[in-house]
Figure 1 (cartoon, rainbow, N blue to C red):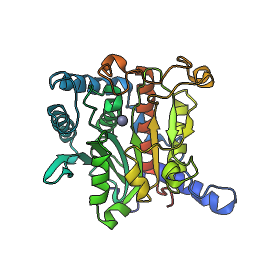
Figure 2 (cartoon, rainbow, N blue to C red):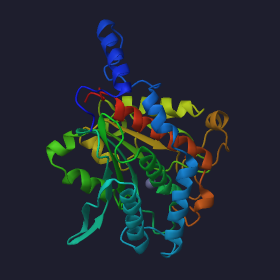
Figure 3 (tube, rainbow, N blue to C red):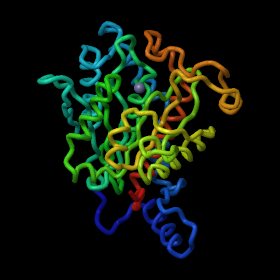
Length: 337
Ligand code: ZN
């Protein structure tokens, strides 16, 4: 918890920017926290793709020992839940495994962990789905998002000096109509939903021929763009990706685990590297890789194994999401709804 009267350093820097915005017109309605905050840089600087890769190796072993997949309802999923919950508990987090219903009388578990510090009334939240399809181990989809979040959670630690509590979520049954994330959001009370200041969804961060995509604030309908404030989440993630050396493209949401958060009016961003769409010539020029080839040839297939994972994009997104989470966690002013 931040002691009363002692703002984190980044908060003070930001307060002066906010004061400047009152004097001059032209400041955005939902300003983003500043990129050069030293506390955020220190938190994010410890995060790496190499750390995420270690987590992916464990998910591969879990799938290999569970018939080749981690699909919700199966042994591979249950082992994934126990593993992730154990890692977070060992790191010192408060961990819960809230259930959601998949059939009358049948429930499965999500995994949710939160820092012991920061204001729990203004939670900065990030999530990734922990299940795979039945046809494969799902190391890119979405082991990559899970591994990035675990790396960030471990490096951040359970009691960082932040203004807002940070919550990490690992969803079940994304591959089965988003039941885990939907059940979670629907199961919250209205005050609990209101306490989530923003949500960042990670789904496929390591497509072998992937792009660098950010979601939020783009699209004609709210289901595609996210509610007001989403563009701020997307902007910060884009800045953080730029710091890793890549210019991201902003695209609309396509109905992943962010859907229930968007529907609840929570400012939302997304990080994706693409699934079965084809990379354009322009995208190949900007990012490398092969034009006219799909982003992930192993999408929803048995070959979505460790060897399928793009270590370069995994590293960039892990560091960029770490920086995004840290910056929002330190910001005294969060995106307006
Ligand atoms: Zn996915």
